[in-house]
Image 1 (cartoon, rainbow, N blue to C red):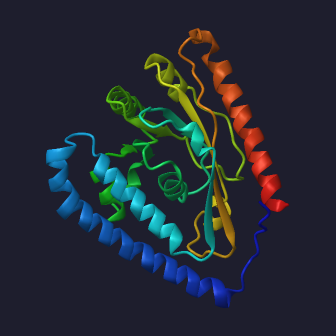
Image 2 (cartoon, helix red, strand yellow):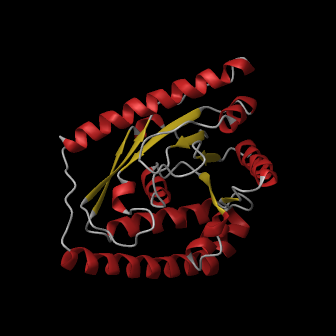
Image 3 (tube, helix red, strand yellow):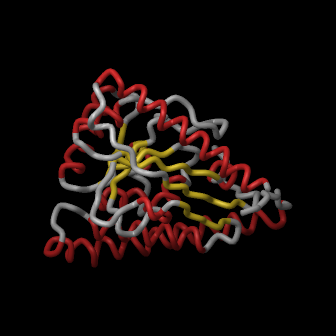
Length: 263
C-alpha cells in the first residue's frame, strides 16, 4: 500500500469540504430519524436493553459518511482477529474526531461495541442524539466522579457481552504519536476477564486537522486490528507492564503503517 498525501488547492478543497459537511449533516438527520422512528420501536421487541440495532444504524451512517467523501478511502487490516460471538475491551489511539467514524465503519459489523466520547458531543443535533440512542458513553474529562461512573457503565456493558472501546491516552494526540496510556481500561479487562483488542488508527489527523473544518489532502484512512491480548492471569503489579507492552506493539504497528503509506 503506497499512498501519498497531497495538499489540494483551495478551489478544490473548499467545495469538497462544503459537500462533505452538508452530506454528513443530511446523513445524520436521515439515520437519526430512522433510528428514532423505526429502529427504536422495533428494538423494544427484539433487542431490549442492548441497543444493538441502534449501533448498526450508527455503523451504516459512518460507512456512508466516509463513502461520500472523495478524499477518504478506508482500509482495514487484521479483521480476522475479531471472532464472531466474542466481546472485547477495545483500546485505540486517538488522533481526531474522525476516529469515531473510522472505528464504526472499520471494525467488523458483527462486533457490537460502545465507545467513550466527551460529553460535549452528545447534545449535537442528530449526530449526538444518535450516539445517545445507541448507548455510547459520555465522559466529563474534568470530573473524577465522571470517570468512576463511566467505569461502572463500561463494566455493566462487558458483563452483558458487549464490547467497550477506550482511548487510553485520555485525549487526542496533538502530534499524531501514541502517548502514555492510563491504566484504568487494563485493570477493568483483568477484573472482568475480557481480552484486550488493540486497534491502531492512522490518517484521521491529516484528514481533518484539529480546529479546522477544511479537508485539504487526499487522506488514506487505515484501521489496523491487532491480536487480542489476555491480561486476566497477570498479577496486579504487572498490569502496568502489560499496558506498556501493548502500547509498544501499537507504536511499532503505527510506524509500519506509516512506512507503507509513504512508500
